[in-house]
Length: 63
Image: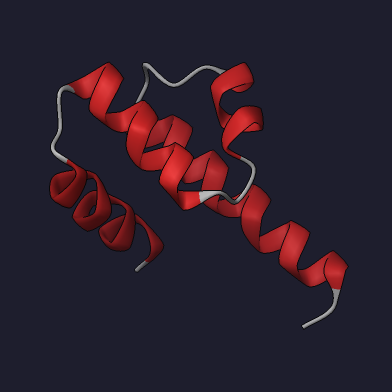
């Protein structure tokens, strides 16, 4: 997969995340930038999820 395709897929995924979880700011999404551990941490902080819940929610979003 080339970098342009990967970037496009990431942009689509972050758009879905921002739609689904309205508390996520653009800055937070930029900080995450493909680092899934960071995503889990933000979701735990913003939504009070456990790491496992955040992982599951992210996997469901990708589907």
